Amino acid sequence: MDQAKVIIFTTPTCSFCVAAKRYFREKNIRFTEIDVTRDQSAARDMLRKTGQMGVPVILINNRPIVGFDKPKINQMLNIKN
Image (tube, rainbow, N blue to C red):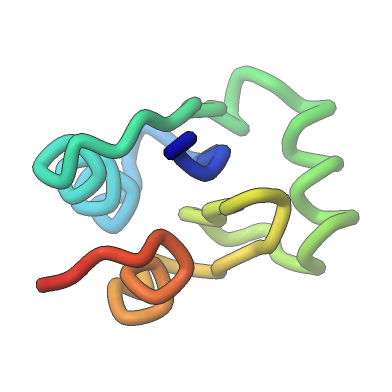
């Protein structure tokens, strides 16, 4: 089965971003990281999609999760604890 497409918008100083990336690695979830401090168009894209400037914003198959919301991530990726 193909894994869902996971994109995480981050900044270098965001502790929740680090926690989310660590969690994805622990669960062997492949993800694409976009540092919004280095990519202004991605930051605008994130704001347009979610209305949020805060990070992390996680897109799972283009459906946004704002923040490191582990229950929602588990549900959308079908991860069993």
